[in-house]
Each structure stands twice: as structure tokens, then as C-alpha cells.
Image (tube, rainbow, N blue to C red; front, side, top):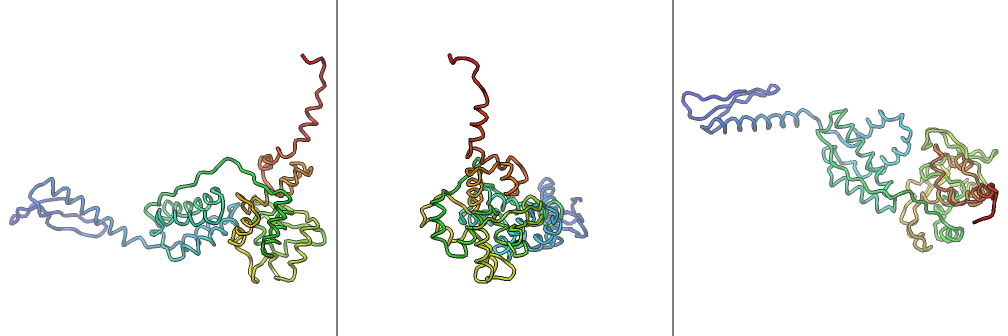
Length: 333
């Protein structure tokens, strides 16, 4: 780059070439310092124009497709696909450059209206951030990513229903949600699995349900024994669909936390309760009825024993037995 004066002009001229773009023009100033500022400003403008013209605009769907291809090994890919289905309905007309802080915050607030936890909202935001970060740092589809504000997550929370509360809730639900709720209460199945449960997962002869590794949150196959209530629900669903167990209007159910679910909770007088809390209820009922934590871990398909320790306080009988193993050797003071 250089600045100079022509013999027939009092103004400085700027001359430089950037990526094949040649700039040679008057700065319209007689002061060298101002001419240098002009030169730098024009260089930044040419750089910006070059980047804008050379970098194509990619859509959210293009980014989603590539992300799924590269991350198909991910343990929770099934859950991510569910999140992409929700996001796809809202970002179908967006390019990556148009996904701003305001757009992301609007998505987060809409998700919050589904009566989900802050952790659920954060997992959705984390997926958006993962896609945009990869698009920026690895694919070079973006120059920068917007700031994403995560929600504050409270300490571990366990909300479960009493027998009477469960009966009230079941009495208020429409039939398709009632059957899904009953099945969850007596199997502990996660929402993602119960929504996509297929008849091929059911073994009526052995009275078991199999969740395959690619369908499991832990990435491991596990089997769930089916009790009489769960089997009764399955019998009632048999004629509704040839592939999926739980359907609504002959289509697989994509959402549990619906308006009908929330209204049923309200009519039943149940507050602060989410669909995932049905799994907490199932686990809590088990522990209160004598199921060991080791057995519960196997039944629920948890990868870590720490996850089931949350329910240990619901049954202190084993601690009482342990406490009584110490025999007093003298008189109390």
C-alpha cells in the first residue's frame, strides 16, 4: 500500500491491491495523517466486501445436515434429532447469518412455555451453540457466533406423585395421554423412548420391552420387564397403529408437554410437575416398596449409580438395620 501526490493535484492518492481488487483514488485531503486513515478505512471496506462476496450464505438446514453427519456417533444423537425437529419448524427460513441473539432468545422463551425445566431449555441452547460453533470454527461458514444466554439450573430436584395424585391426573387426561402416562408410571420409560416406542420393541412372550443402544440415552441396550398394568395398556393400543405403540390421530406423538397435559394437571390440582417427573414417580414408588437401588439402576437403564442415589432417602429401612448392628457395651452416661 502507498499514498502519494500527483504533480497536478494538492491531494494525496491511495494505491493498493487486495485479492485482485485494485484501488487507486484520491483521498480528498492534503494532510498525510488523514490520508493514512483514509487508506486504512478503504482497505477494511474492501476486505469486508471481499468476505461478503466470497463466503456463500448457508441455511440452518444445511448446517443441521452436516452436523448430524459428523456427529452420528454421539451417544445422545436420538435426543438431538428430536430437538432438531422442534428447531426445524422454527428455523426453516433462516440462514446462519440471520440467527441472532434475539432469535435465539425468542426460541428459548417459546420452549419455556412448554412447562419444561431450565435444564431442558439449556440442552436445546447447547445444541444450537454446538452447531453455530462448528459452522464458525471448523466449516468457516460464519465469521462469528451470537452470544447464547443459558438459564440458571437449580440443584437436583425430585418431584413425584402420590397414589391419589396419580389417580386424579389419570382421570383428567384424554385417552391417548392417559395410556402414555400409565405406561410411563409403570415402566419408568423416558419421554423420548415412549413417544417413539414401536411394536418391534415389545416381546409379549417374555413380557419385556427392549430399548436398543441407538435408542438409549446411555448408548447401551437394556430390557424392562412389563407388569400387568403395562401389558394392559399395550393390549388397548394394539389395533391403533401397525408400527408405533402410542399415536394420536393415527400419527406418532411428537410432544408430551401439550396444552391438554397442562390443563389436565391444572384440573387435577397438581403444580410444579413435568412429564419427566413421571419417571421420578416410578422410581420413587419402587424404592418405597422395597426395590433396591441396584435393582432400580438396572430397571431404569441408568449408566451411573450416582443417578439412583437421589432416591435413597425414600427408604431408610436399610440404614435402620445397619444402625442396630452396633451393640452398646456399657450404660449410657
